[in-house]
Image 1 (spheres, rainbow, N blue to C red):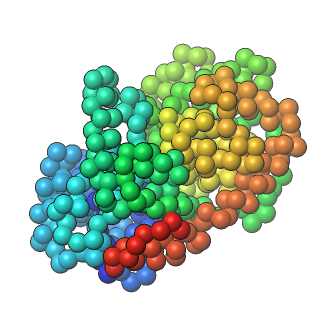
Image 2: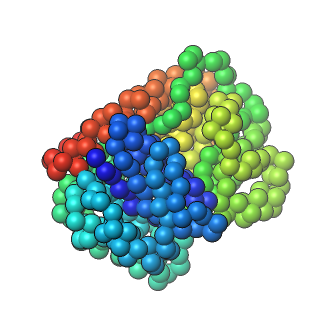
Length: 370
């Protein structure tokens, strides 16, 4: 079978993140099952027009304004695809109306308030209106997502058919849970693309609150992005330059080492499709303390695999961290339960069922949750 993914970023795009890692996981597995998989995305500076990543053929043409007509022309020149996957991230590809084959939509999150973090009014309002209208326009197109909150949001917008497929991670859980008492100085980690919607500034402010509470702590920020310089300046302005380490992007092994060493992962995003780095941290025996937002309340089970703060504020997050310092037995219980749960999200468990579902969609079979 021949599969095509339409996505606004490919894995080598400097702005690529967890969404692209997950997408590549699905497509590369389809290739290993003997299928052909293609990924069409806009070009970015210094990008090759075509490359192959883990057996997936990547095509890059056009920009945000021209990629859709270019994708349409390219598809018309190619042998027929069995399934085209229209991946939304605020803006769709409108593929169901031009791809001339089976088509489904893939979405990680309903952006909603995320528009406000990137655009000022009235552009943020236009973005939110456009997104709601798009989902209504796609109401008869089958959707696929990993978050029950995203599924509910799509249904609220009128979408009739949404299939849940859990995310998987490449991170292999530790073979044995090592000893890691929660002690000072606290080792905190934030792993994220450094963009406004990730609110890493809240993680830095949480560290500030913890220090003001008399706790000794250090924060390691892993990732890069448009907000990196702003975050470094913020840490310096707060007098935290020696307490916050910015590593930039890291190879997976180095990132895992930081997550294994950390006592806690902090996640302060506006919302997430899921929160892959939560499960990756859990696999390393590290629970997370997260904001009470869509996606994160599913990747972290409150008072089971970590804590969900009472509010979306650094003060509330700091109080949750301090709670675990005061209750080391509770911390160890969350560590073990998070580690056990992370094993169920490894790709080896997720991909076979997901691939069978995608093959069924290519044959035109009815969709159903996995």
